[in-house]
Amino acid sequence: MNWLKNILARLYAAYALILFICTMLIMLLPMWLVSRLPSPRNIRYFMALGRGWMHVYMPLIFCPVRRKGVEHFKAKEPYIIVCNHNSMMDVPTTTYAIPGPSKSLAKKEMENTPIWGIMYKVGSVLVNRHDPESRKQSFQEMKQVLSEGIHMLLYPEGTRNKTDQPLKSFYDGAFSLAIETQRPILPAVIFNTRKIMPPGKVFYALPHIIDIHFLTPIRTEGLTTDDLEKLKENVYNTMWQHIAQKQ
Image 1 (cartoon, rainbow, N blue to C red):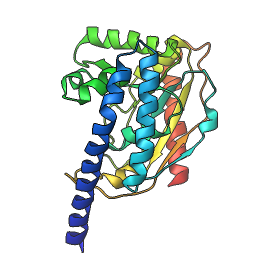
Image 2 (image 1 turned 180 degrees about the vertical axis):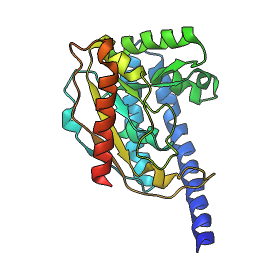
Image 3 (image 1 turned 30 degrees about the vertical axis):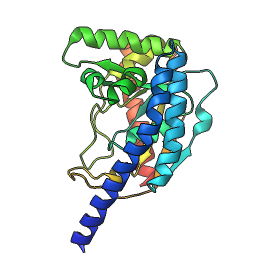
Image 4 (image 1 turned 120 degrees about the vertical axis):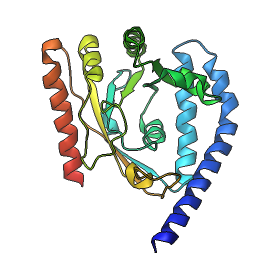
């Protein structure tokens, strides 16, 4: 029956892609218009539109998103949201689930992508990871995002986790940002997006319920660069243990 499953998975992938393109074309004009507003109003309205879009799109592709722990977000307090990364479905999931506006870190070359470039320029801090100056500039931009009351969403694994382990090792960036700005880290764990888009499969997807859990924020007031490794280990263990408990 594997052959039938493969056919259905590719038909579903085509359905999800076509629906995404159709809904994106509807959203493109209003998202472009709000992108012309000054910061931070542009990202606030932009993400509100994106969240509304995903609230329609995700149920239509039979991937409803269930949220837990939204009460951990305090009004008017920006967080550094640290999230695991299993598939491309993590992006629409976080867009759907995060209350309030947020930005993420993305590759700078994405700004030149037709249509997508508009969304990346507004919804992301862009960085060329191979350029030290670009990395420094992106760090300053992330600090500015937080100072404007916008959440900063970061995937500390760096790339999608294609291993058989719950998490890959973490990079330092999110934790350096938290210590320098003294902003709290809010760990988030996404479940089941790998079941929708399994690693190693091309144009293959299957519908599944998605769960995203926001965990208790970890305060960083008073921490210094000497505490970076301890902070990183604390967040890593918190997320690992939560995944282990739910599997």
